Image (cartoon, rainbow, N blue to C red; front, side, top):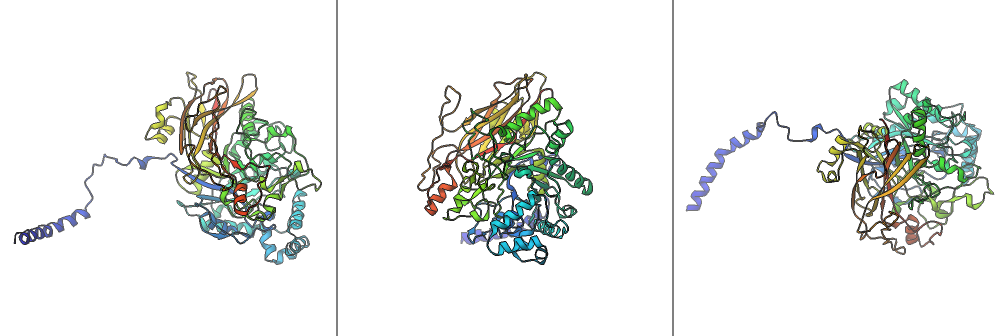
Amino acid sequence: MKNSTLALGLSTILGAALPYTLAAQDAPPPSDAQVQYSPYPKETFPNQVFYGDTHLHTSYSADAGMVGAIVGPEEAYRFALGEEITSNHGLPVRLERPLDFLVIADHAENLGLAPLIASSDPTVLANPWGKKVHDLVKLGDSPSAFNEWMAKMQALDDPFASDTTMAKTAWNQLTEAAEKFNEPGRFSAIIGFEWTSAPDGNNLHRNILFRDGKDFADQIVPISYYDTGDPEELWAWMENYEALTGGKMLAIPHNGNLSNGLMFDDVTLTTKEAFSPDYAERRARWEPIYEVTQPKGTSETHPALATNDEFANYEIWDKGSFGPEPHTADMLPREYAREALKRGLAYEAQLGANPFKFGLIGSTDAHTGLATTTEDNWFGKVALLEPTADQIRFEEVIIGRVPEDRSEDQRIRSRRTAAAGLAAVWARENTREDIWDAFARKEVFATTGTRMRVRLFGGYGFSPNDLNKSDFAAYGYANGVPMGADLNLPSQGQAPSFLVRALRDVDGANLDRVQMVKGWLNADGTLAEKVYDIAWSGDRVPGKDGKVPAVGNTVDITEATYSNSIGAPFLQAFWTDPEFEPAHRAFYYVRVLEIPTPRWTTIDHKIFGVALPDDVPPTIQERAYSSPIWYTPGG
């Protein structure tokens, strides 16, 4: 009886209160107009890392489509977004995780030719040369067709020069696909193309990235090597685009290691003149980024250039080029990024401008439409080299095909390709504009395919305690500068200090160490460099030479597996330059190494039962390279 009375009482009270509860939900909660509880509406600094590829080729590139690539732009975007698609050879393929952005950078030279050959388009058949290469492809002799095309390009003899319809149509299709798949906030389809300058077969290629959408990009047709092979004329063309449209462009050079000493030469390409201040300023403006790692090798540094750097010998390609000229050792200083960054300091002292002031990224340069970068999902540099037990996967000659009698030591075979790389961008939003702006200010870093996360700040007021701040990034921006920026000399001339954080790929390997790479210009004009271990895993102790011992190796080569029982998932460091000289120009960038993991050739050994090649290592240490921070005396 008591329970029934209680229940009736509660029912009455709740029923009476219900209208007041609903009314309260309709009214705004009490607030103080002066209180701003959330700190984030006012934040403007980059707070996210986005991973992508600025260098993917689809079937629209002649050197991809004519040798077996059938994956087109739309399939390439769907793949980058994480969808499963069918590879060029019929294999199911998917990324472990989607990309955040993609640049389809198909070659401007005869853009769209290969799909027209595949469909036996009348435009191709009406052209005598076009019909010749069409028939070769249809007969199954793609290598001969490709050689015919390469010969035309090297001779700057465009077989379709009298009719730009093919290029315009293909370009419109590429920009249309970019618009279709661009989804601000989720995925950025950045419009771009590759300008393929290759004098005498030497690689001076650049990828051109638009900040803009289709309405801007469609006002031009991409400039090609048929138009000019001179970077200065490329920059003039880019300047004209900006004047015409009000849009923005930048260029990303790549493969200096295959330029036979031309990428970072001491003279201009065409006139062979010494650099002028105007040249240095224009190059720095239009080319703020350099692609330091990709399947055709890593061009950070070379063992012959960095004799005290035990990690310099990583996926090195230093044999030959696409042309007949043999590679020689004297070319090396003009091919590798670290050496160019050093020489840039000397040019700045001489000219007042630094032509080699660039940030660092990686990308795939895959000619398959598939932006794969991990060792266990490597679908090759070109369609012919997709996963297979066929010896072509390891034996195809990539570099040194001409002349036919070239010596073996001047050839590079497909087993030497690297499963690389990625461009990592610090930005606020995943939009074309924010990502492009990050490239322009050089707040980017390169990885060899891993998705580790790297932060770098430089300044003068940092302390070790700053590493543990809850507002680490906000503090770093407020009291220093990020990767890609400049430090200036404070009045007291104190040494700069740096804050570094590195977080492993969540699905990848632990970290071995963090290194600071410094380059500087001495008072006597000589250039120098030094690599410092500044954080490492475990309880290792540096030796008398200051070097930290190797982290170990857990790789089971037979099973192609490794263990994260060594290394660390996270490393951080506070570091002050112990050899700082206020009068010396300098740069600083971070290199982060993972523990050893199986190389893709070792994974192929496990999956296909093929023999391990003896001229590539069975294990590698994936890595990331930050863009530099520059120090200039006097500001």
